[in-house]
Image 1: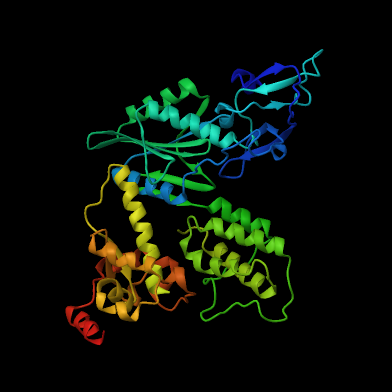
Image 2: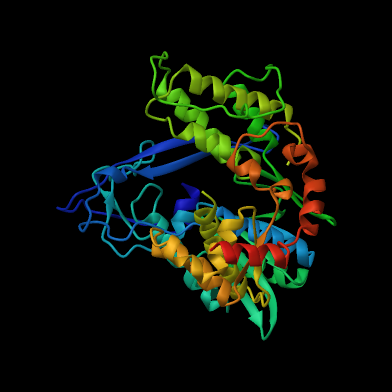
Length: 450
């Protein structure tokens, strides 16, 4: 309530003839990365479900930084040996100015004596108001623009301040959290001071915990993990004392919805798969197995749940770690988007981005127009791989299956060979750096066969 009054969120007025929206209190506890209690929080939220589109709200959605953008910021900061700082805006949504005329009831326990029949007219947004996220984004977007930041064309939550060819500051917004990195500490501190002049903010210093991820910034790089979240999942599904395993799925194992196997609770299964999906933010080795389990959300049985529990046993043992042509098209699409993002950050990539593919036909299709006759059934959008190759944005390079790191993302692997073990990722990366394209003789042979 002190924050609301300090922020001049509302005015007490007579009850109007138009609809008045109710409010309620929400209480929750906020925890640190190690699971200890950080603080108790209280929010006054609007019963936004009673709002009507076109009457008391229009625009509602606000952009949120993608995880890929956050990871790119990590990579860029590690390369330039910058530190990423974190700012937390207190009651962020209370800063958004409202364009609509909205009235709310007085909150329980805080009615003004002698004026209980009056209501509040909102000047700024409250939580759960339909347009609250958009109002906050518009406010911070306008302020950053006034400070001289340019907004990325490819990512509307990413801002950069440049001086000719030099990048001075980078800011990424995730709702009420701001990530800041810069070429000089004095610039970062100056930006913090500018933000605190307008918004009530908490300076969290060098980022250590963000979106359930532990972030360790060192002189050797930036390391991210979800150790605490992994333990939380194990505890939630009573697997904290389970026996660890070294593989996610058995090679050749196939899951199916066909059969008379006993069904399981869909709600619990979906909750488990959802937790595992979020864990893939820092654990790409889980991606293939989780995507397999996600196919059976509507028809899960004991076999699917058993496979999911096996993933938890694999996680318990690895707590401390870290279709070909169409797949190539998806990789190229991501690479081009990242190149655009880097261009907005004043880090233009002049050389082509290498895409390593272990399917010789996929490489040949992308490089050789003679294959058109045999690939006319492909959707036209997938042929942009060849266009990207010709314009020099990407370069498809054949990588033998022995050195293909991405295998762990596409199929169940055993532990027989070094490339099939998470423990050997550094060694695999060294091998991958030595991989090269096929010899010219093999390329000519492929062209003759075409």
